[in-house]
Image (cartoon, rainbow, N blue to C red; front, side, top):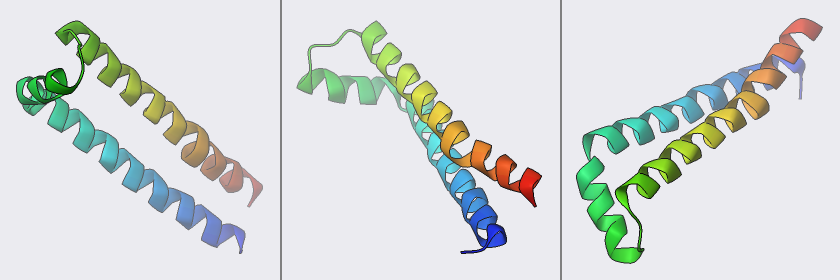
Length: 80
């Protein structure tokens, strides 16, 4: 696999992953109450805990995107 192919692959993955992150954020903000009611049926969780879990999950996912997609992409841009 060439460097150019790997760079385009990482850029594509970056776009897909940020799309998933944006979809998660939009679903969380628009349908917050219904999502909370759904999860409250399954788990004993307060609304504050629910918010904390989702924001923490989004933060970890975003860090993963930056670490595994964006950083290697920039490293390959500097090499070539």
